[in-house]
Image (cartoon, rainbow, N blue to C red):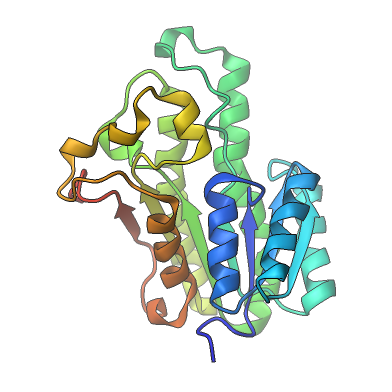
Length: 251
């Protein structure tokens, strides 16, 4: 029996990139996977790939920054599967951002980043909380970023949002622990996704020399951490931020 067989896991931002990798990895371990994305067509593609690999799946088009959309998403999952065991808050603004000094960032862009990257995980967790509380168990995994630890320059809104995700993780762990719900964060380093490859010249070697493990980080490296934090092996771990970057930040 697979470690996650019978469990229902939601992944936001699952249409592409790391989110798609997480959805496929969770499905590979036997979970029923809900692929959520603001782009319904990519959500459908991910769900179809999970189903083709042998696990039940559901695609949901939803906007993580909209409360009604998140509530509708949670209802759709419960209606289909009858339960919610895990939520991976992966959706975020990243590749569409232009790096610029903090004083040149447009306030509207700042607000949009915070709405998706910080408000989104809060709303999604709020939406699934009743189902998890009713079962007395659950796993929430928030995707932060190694840029919070490095203070990466020229995208103050992105870095700030990912730091806020760690703060949110700690508060939620305290507030949800009494209901048997574990809340943790993962801070990936620079990972070779399509988004990163389009943003950074020579992405395959970017930052590699700074790591204890001197190779580029792959999506599968992060997916392994997600599977662990969703699975039973992490049942007594909560409120933590796991840095997955090959030893670039020793946290």
